[in-house]
Amino acid sequence: MALKISLPFFLLSLLVLTLVRAEHPVVRRRSRARAFIELQCRTTLYPDLCVRCLSYYVSNFTTTLSHQQLAQIALKVSLERAESTQAYVTEVAMELKQRKAKDYRAVKECLDQINDGVDQLTNCIKETRMIKENGTTSNFPWHASNVQTWMSTALTDASMCMDGFSSRAIEGKKKAIIKAKVLNLEQATSNALALFNRFAARYRSSHVNKPKV
Image (cartoon, one colour):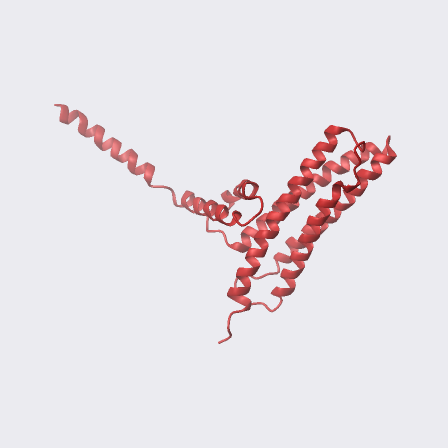
């Protein structure tokens, strides 16, 4: 009698265990994409931030990510951070323009740097779209050099943003928020540049330097 009772339970348990282990193909591919992101982010200066930012986009991919796709996503993340910072600093600048001319000038200098950074990152994204993922292109060194130059400039813009702030330049809370946003932007851009450099090196070795038959 005990055997009759336990057998259905055993079969049910076996079925549940099989279903748990049988991971859906899409979920499995997304897991591989996340593993790829974690591996590549190890080459950046801020790997934890890199994984957090890029993993958000894993759900959009049902196939394995390429190095080029990852570099493009990282650039997109950096541009989003730049635009968010731009919006906030613009808001603060408009408030100060009406009542504190000296403080406004300090914030405006920062805003000018951020505006330039947004332009540089926008150019980077447009430029990466001109790089073919498969096949050779004699224009690759030109495209890659442009992206690396513009990203380096965007990094410099972010680091210079705070230079015009004095200790009395705006109220503490807003200044702290600007600093946090700029720091996040700087780190995201640094990560994006590292991932693009890694993609560029792999592209050169597999395409540009490929011997002609």
